[in-house]
Image (cartoon, rainbow, N blue to C red; front, side):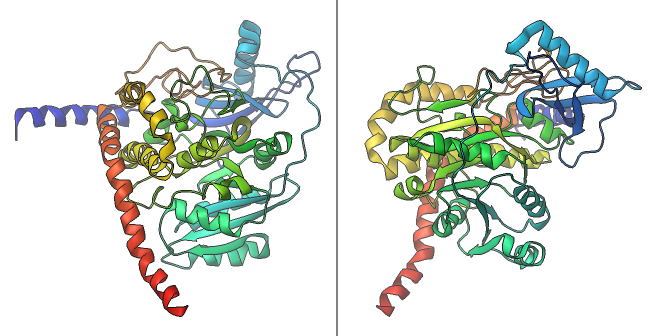
Length: 474
């Protein structure tokens, strides 16, 4: 073994040792209520996160709500023997008194009635994860949206477990369809083909949706006829393993607590790479499209997404195609889902490589399918390369980061904050991001274009017999 290789292995060993030292964190929700004068009402209501036990002493990651509306997150250490609710309400109240709307913003003037959301089809693609899927479907059936249907797309199934679950437990309340060709984008396109709603919402089989998720995600389509896509807030359902804590501590999937609309006719001044940094707009676990718009742009590129050689990028592809067609994209933190992050170091390695590959695969797909964007892409390339280096850099812990709530004023940032060794806000870090994961992400980025082209070829070869058979029937 060469000396250089031995040194690299020792570095990775130390990184894994540090990773294993990360301790679990409880997840909770704290609703402070809201009086008309903006004061805290009723002492607050504390409840554990989805599927979590009652809150006890130790570190707690808290979603803070005011009058039911998500407004920020905080990290608190509950001393042994102390009352968790008293500690958390006191911390939130002190943050409110010290920082006012910066940390715990008021919802603002009383808004008018929420627009009636359009009829919606919720598509959830899955493959051999019936136990997780059941939790997701239970939460979807509890939505307060007035007019929606649920479609489960069973992608390249190898057993009947998903079909049996849907038919036995949900019956006519959930539509079941199969898609034999593997790949998340292919499965989503199957959902697009069978959808009846004016809007199509997508989520994953490993989430628990807040009861108002679908209403908050789709109501903006009624208010804005130019809106083509909407995305929502994604927070961790559990922080029980080092992998889950580390991922969330570097941003997870959260995009902050400030609503934002992206308009291709008025490119944002603070987004010089717009629209190619699509990861800033949202994630596939909480996204919706106007059905006619998504169909007009051809749906998702079937050679992208998990389950293909491209490894990912299908959601990002959809965002950019809709923006490039002249439609707006709106991010709303009121549309909340709780996501079950991956649990092991090996999962993180796979995820880091897949994220890198998905990023460059979707960019390749965009340029292949819409070559008119190539000049704009070239103009942004130098800054894009610098951004990629920053995105994939190993990151040291910021041990002195302040704890407390984060109002998400930097909506669109990719990284997360958490003091005291666990996630808190979403713009600082308290755990180092291992160099091993950064290197895997870079390797994935180099592989992404190759993976996408291989996925396209594999898809053509798979579909060719069916096309020949249809031709023979004619």
